[in-house]
Image (cartoon, rainbow, N blue to C red; front, side, top):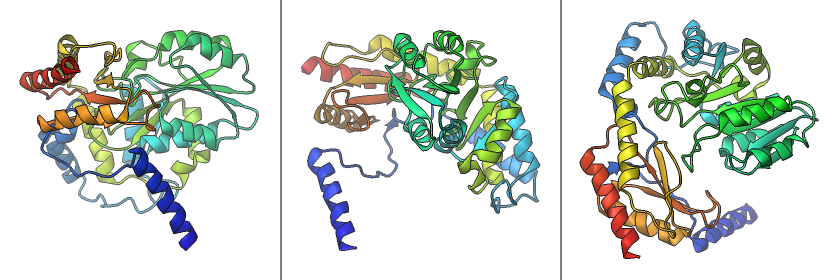
Length: 376
């Protein structure tokens, strides 16, 4: 045991000496510019009341699900919810997972086989990378949003080929050129999988649906912990893929099913999303206001993004921490994103805008950032 503990301590000491040691922090009373609660659903009293009413209308529901869905944990309510969500996004079917991480892990690890190929955008979420690693497929990555790089990898592909992208990238906030990527994947007979975690909400049904591409996409992953203010995820697909995942996706097969409360929260969040035009409009207004007011320089560039995620590149962990500390001292909850979470030289502050941020809050945010940039 001592040898193992010595190893653990040495690795943690390396992190501390490099300035990249991670710790957990409790909630705070700062103005939220860091969470993924884009439409304010996580704090919505209306949503909370709807969830409570839905639970009261099912008095025989249990506190827990009691088992996996293949044993005692399945509910008709869950299956109906899956098809309701699929219909909302204009897909044939859907299968619920306990998190977005589980969804990508289950989908990619079970789908591709030895002799197949998975091609990932180089900035894809860690859950997709881990899912691909667990498969027996050959794996490639292509330069971010670079269709020429993607085509070069497609020329190397063998077997069934799956290309995996995010519609809105979680660390850059930029959009994937979905139509161009689909044109190339279809040319080579490959299948496109799109993670919509950060697009649903800004685009009510996601970017795939916004661009009318749902009939060309092999599968889409939607998570509920961002704009929907809940937890969990769903893989949207054909009935055929849904049946396949029920039989082969290990995170689905071997996980305890979501509770009734969990399912009711998701259902009520979708009902609220269907009428959230005012919240979506407010979010877009704040995005435009931030981009209009924030200064830029060559040394502190603002990444190109039309989403709720706005990033200013500081190019070092120390500078990212410095501006984050200044913003937090001003009462604004903005966090630094440090290497190795992002590549060395791409360290940044990641700002998340919300429908509920006020004009004065956005003004304080941009003024504080501008003062920092102009003082350098």
